[in-house]
Length: 359
Image 1 (cartoon, rainbow, N blue to C red):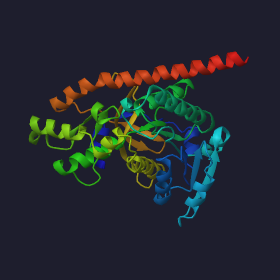
Image 2: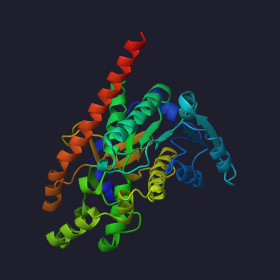
Image 3: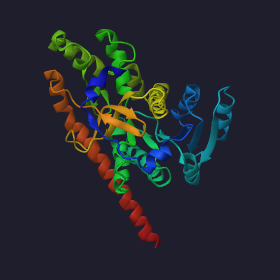
Image 4: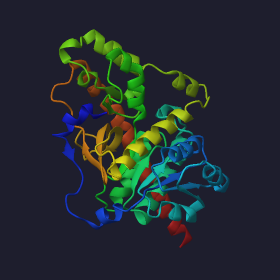
């Protein structure tokens, strides 16, 4: 997993250096994770996986429906840790209060491809993420907010706009869970590349295989990677998996995979926060401050005690095929990010109109 560490030595640092109130608030004994959307097809297996990690002193379950039965079932698992139940608009405040990590997984069952969602579904998921983000800013500003609700390129953009509108310079505190692409890259390419166990293949770009580029040249000797091999391996990564095909047929078989990815992401954060294993690296979708000519972009990040410690810097010399592919996919990523910005404006305008109507 630490094969990318050299790329972070010159990476963009995004964490504050001063001793702020935030650092004091975060450095508490014991970790709390809040799971927003705990009753859906991802939230249910994810809650059990989080319990099994034995990394959290408290798991707070929240959904629009009652989560008491779910909490009771988790409490029957013979592992230490408190499980609390929360419901509805008022319940979200208590769920995220004093949380170190907030996982946003609610909405329609996850699929990263924006083409799989109807316009109404995209809007509804974005509105859900908007409400969760507003609550995080207001009631748990020191928590690390991790968005997984799909389509991630668009929903994460909405979350980032919420944080920016609140004048929170916490771009290292809101993160899109995008390590599914790295997991797919490891599965699809690991045996071919003969990578070491736990080695992260860097994936940059958007949140789907078709809008992202695995930087194969970063985990192989460039001299041994022919153009033909690079094209073959990249196409293998972009090829629809069994899960993608099942999803296109409206068969929900990807929930466990997504839950595993979110749990791995949260575990890496938790281990870093507790300083047990600092410096974990995961692929994420983040605010980049236009570093890549796009406000939000997918790339590997290194975790620190307060969230993202540093962002991956592109190698000065990529394989020319990878560089060409990146140039092709960037307009699509930019379009999906722009859609998120437009939906954010629609949500805000709708709320303002509703206030005016009531007044």
